[in-house]
Image (cartoon, rainbow, N blue to C red; front, top):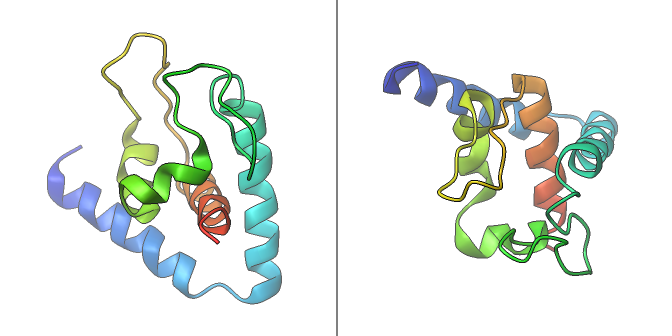
Amino acid sequence: MGTAPAIATASALLMCLAAVPAAAWDERVKRGRALARTECARCHAVGRTGVSPLRQAPPFRTLHERYPVEDLAEALTEGIRTGHPTMPEFRFEPDQAEALIAYLKTLER
């Protein structure tokens, strides 16, 4: 995927996040938390407390200290790749990426 389509995808995700009513937002956060627990908790601390099971994996509650979590939209839909071999590549559907980002936003408080 080229840069322009990726930017368009990320922009669309951000606009969707901004326009969600409270009840839908709560449901999206629940889906994001479930996704984090099933797909990410093997390595990352995905809640407000605790250490990551894999030392190199940053706790999700600290991600916003490194960069705006909204910036993950493109990486989540195109496939997250990291510099260490222990993290598998993940590619989420746009609605899954929205849900995970919504959940990550709740950890910033």
